[in-house]
Length: 215
Image (tube, rainbow, N blue to C red; front, side, top):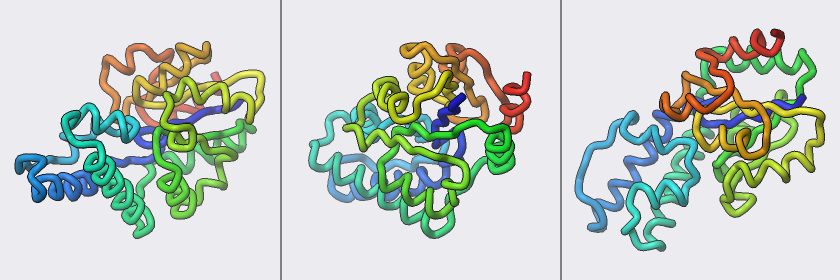
């Protein structure tokens, strides 16, 4: 079986890293007259985590001119990469041990994320993700098409008898719904109760995953 993991909100606790980057980009928009001054807390913007960059900006400020939107998006992306490379990336408690256990159980582990390619590469380097994961599928590499449309490409590159999607947002669970594979929701991530209600199973902490698979 191949286990497909979302990244932010499933493996990586992104809230503070994203909040800092978001606030810097928003300050630029305020300074240039595109936004009104406002103080955003980490929790105010965490619901954008797991959403592709284009979708995030079209939800947050759809009236923003496209060139400005791209510039603000690039700033957030670079700020987050800089944060990762400076040691600010944090895996959730129990994730390293859980991934060690899953590898020992001979599962193939891959990542399917709505992130940019450079962002994932920074995490691979900073956190040594290659000790667990064999393949990475970043939405930017496929023109930010939905994850459910990337899955057939993943299946061709990683042929297997069965797959399991593990994530925290509705975009993860649509992979299962549309492609007919089971899904596990991570209640410790950034998804709402409504999003988690559609997945097949829910775990409260990372170490529950190996126990669930053994059963």
